[in-house]
Length: 449
Image (cartoon, rainbow, N blue to C red; front, top):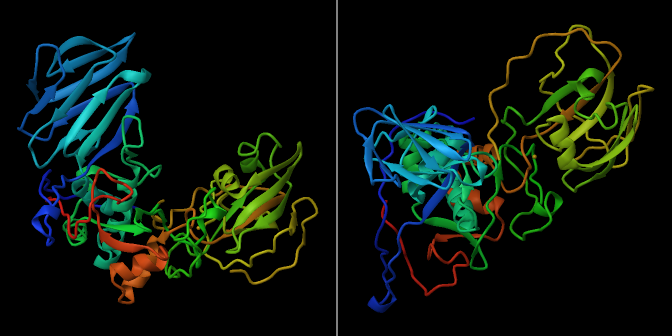
């Protein structure tokens, strides 16, 4: 899903360039991102090789060390610095950084910029503070394979920059998380020459609609058609509508999974498993919006997003079918097969093994992994729930596999972005402290990176 390391170079700061009159020139400092890397009871940081780390915030002043270990103990923190132990208060805030382009190790990954460690709130929290362009070089390589066409990587860079800037200063101790809860960031391990080029050649470019940063969400693969934002979340944005996708070559364009009764019980303990499924409502793109699950202990109505979470499905663009259990087959079969979408309101009965449904032709933040190895085969009996699906993800905004497909067809990054974000514009970011982009007009405010 995300791949390969190389060293990134970074710089903060600087001056905005402008072709307007001298009085219109604006100084723009590169926006800084605060990325939540870790929350837990134990943290270990170490220098990559010989260059020491600078630690600020310690009683007695700044220290130069090679290894820093912290863990919570009682109401405070135990800190071990190059073998020397001392106790600090729980409210201590430490800042660790160095000038080594190879970064600082946290776990199995290396990070540039400053690492801020706080013990407040009952857990150790590590936040990486760094310039947005340095951050993006890793995000692009974490969200897409770096070998993909440059146009797809550029589209990812602009979408990720827009998303990140919109999340800044929302409150709390960080702007974004390093996981799919925001967008994936893996530090220097995901930076390559191609991701650096994608960020550099789209420097400062963002997506706006009516002068404001858009909510530039994206996903892996839609299964042929993207979803409107209002079908998944509360708000329908004018630029997040359902459009044709170009992801037919995606490894998850079509997929299947099987569930037997033993596999369904722990997923749905409130009804004791599933003996029947009623699809109550579908969106215009064919995704399940609401379904009734019937089990030995009663029934349960779930939204499509919750159904996807409970069953661990790749998307909500799915159909359900009761099939006789096969002997010696994997519980979760990943066979690629084109499903036949079932109309809203159709019933799949797992008790009687009948499908009382009219079948019609119907019209999905994470990159699809290569097909997984099948798990060990197990003997099952009775009936199984067969889920036939399309795509991977929520289906809203840019499809990453679709961006790949369009790039292969010769589309540039602007065309790709404007296909998935209808009515948006690609423009230079005007002011890092004005998310509404309503500041004094500046033609080309760029920060140096």
